[in-house]
Length: 91
Image (cartoon, rainbow, N blue to C red; front, side, top):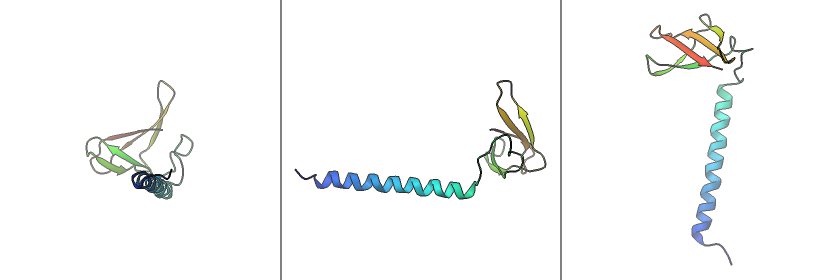
């Protein structure tokens, strides 16, 4: 028995959704070339969410501090370029 038109449409839509996700992941990979970890965190350009501005801001290269938390995770502390508020990113 051949599949109905309705099931064929569903199959086509599924394949389109997958390809859109793949395209989006490629765009993200172009923007951020490297994964951020504690070894290269001071060199990579980062976008951080500022809680006071309520927007994404680029983190200044000169004001970064690499800190290790109590539970052993690494964290970057810095200052927002727009409002001079504290900005934190857990790596």
